[in-house]
Amino acid sequence: MQPTASLGETFPRQSIVRPAGQRAAWIALALLTGLNLLNYIDRYVLAGVQPLVQSAFHVTDEQVGGLTFAFFITYMLASPVTGWLGDRYPRKPLIIAGALVWSLLTLATGLVHTFGELYWRHALVGIGEASFCIYAPALLSDYWPAEQRNRILTLFYLSLPIGAALGYIIGGTVGQAHGWRAPFYVAAGPGLLLAVLAIPLLREPQRGAQEPPARPDRVTLAALMRNPAYWTATLGMAMMVFSLGGISVWMPTFLYRSGHTSLAHASQILGAITVVDGIAGTWVGGWLAQRWLRRNRGALYLLSAWSVVLAAPFALLTFFGPARWTIPSLAVAEFLLFLNTGPLNAAIVNAVAAPIRSTALAVELFAIHALGDAPSPRIIGWVSDRSSLRDGLALTLVTLLLSGVLLFAGARYAPPVDTAQV
Image 1 (cartoon, rainbow, N blue to C red):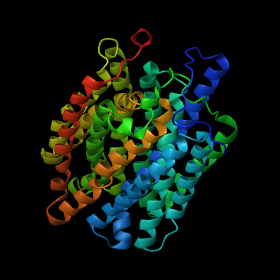
Image 2: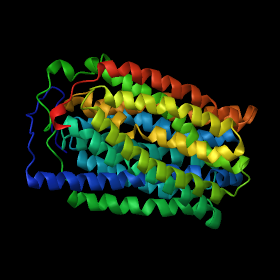
Image 3: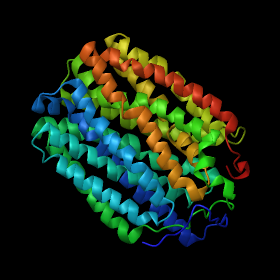
Image 4: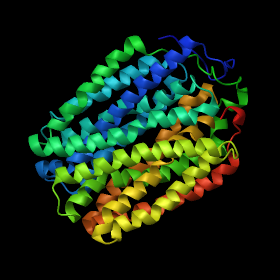
């Protein structure tokens, strides 16, 4: 591969996209959204089949929570390298390579014979997923201008709840019927197929094509470290991801243990809630933020802040309220949290210049996982082993409120957008 840009290069703005470019943009969105769907299926299969894995290998809550920790450690360690590559080389081959890696390793996860092998195979899946989660939003940002990215990333991230729900359902249903290994075989195949289809269909856009030339002082790592719009959004997301990561990993087990229901039923309930709330919440959040942007440039931050603050009391009811309120409260909390999916990701992308965007997304991924869903499942498992799973999940309430505080503060630093085109 030949380098396409250095951090100091600038690129002309192209505000009008020709029809051929529009077709390429929509094809890219479709392909990358499909891969993102499969990415989240692969990630959440383990959560759906988790009690069966515990039974097969005779491990504690803390140990099984460590599988997610291991995944995110490699995910975080890979991020700086993938970010550096994404700012200097074409992203298409890197996206395809990442999808092939995570799909093949998901397939290999079902072939292990010891918990140690499972630990290392699951950890290595993070390498492939880290590359995709950095390059896909950066590539899409070069097809659409800043004022349209909330809409586009809302569509892209609709695949998150659908993929997570399918992961839960495939894990719990297929696992209960055919054993814990079978769901990993089911999840791996489509990713391999779509990665191959992307070879002829996905096009690489001109880097920075939808933005004015970047000043040299905005494309350095030092400038990124001093960027308050970027950091308040990143740290706010990290606190929210701590909560979401812990809840998503442990909720099937929580419903299984506290609701006296089968693993398959618990996974189906959570899958149904996730897909309905995820689609509705992501769509409504993107729509509200787009309208709010016409009046307030901090709308992407403010909507995200209100979503996590309002979700906290419903999460409290989920864990500690009467049994009849568990499912309805969980449904409301998830809907509110999904409101910020498109807006918050758009806020982070808009806060940085194109020549350093992959690096910025790599740093963001490192931060949100190091502070968020890498430690939270294991910490919750540790508390669960010594007290109860309910007490462990209560930790997520604190980080939801911290997320809201950071995002409210970040609204004052939001960069302007072209409101005439919002």
